[in-house]
Image (cartoon, rainbow, N blue to C red; front, side, top):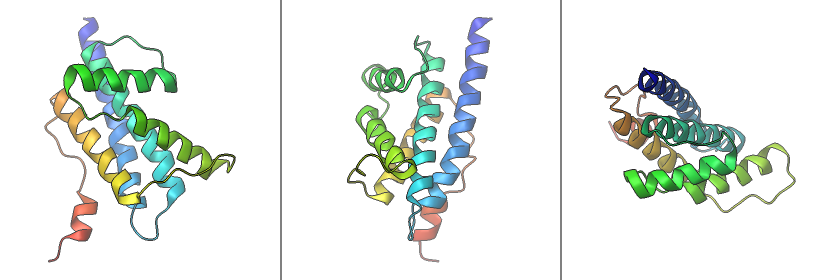
Amino acid sequence: MSKIILNTEAAKSLSYAKQHLERVLAAWDDPTDWADLTIYGFYCLEAAIVAAGLHTGLDFKRSHTDKAEIARKLFQSHGLPDVADFLWDLNTARKASAYGDVDFPDLDAEDVADKIEEYVEAVSALLGDGSNDQDDQKSDEQSPE
C-alpha cells in the first residue's frame, strides 16, 4: 500500500514539475525573462527530482542540499541526467534574480531551458508517464513552417 502512496506522490510532484516547465519554456526566448526562467527552472528541477526520488524509494529530506544529493544518486543508479551542479547554478541565479545579493552565474537561456526540459522528460519516462502534457513550445517556435 505504501508503494501506491509513493507513486501518487511521485505523480503529483511530476505534475508540478510540468506546470513549472511551461513557465520555463515561455521565459527562455528573447527577451529572456531571467527571473521566471531561474525561479521556475529551479522549482521545476526540484519537483522532478522529488518525483524521481519518491518513485525509486530514495529516502531524503526536502532541503535543497538533499535534493542535489538525490539528483546525483539518480544519475548514478538510474541513468537520469546529472543535474546536481546545474541545480546549484540555478539556485544561485534564482537568488541573483530575486535578491541581487549574489553574482549571476554564466548561463545561456536556451541551454537552461533545454537541460530542464530534458530532465523532466527523463523523469516522465522513469515514472512511465506516457502522456506528453507539454506543447513543445520551444521547438515549435524554432521550426520553420
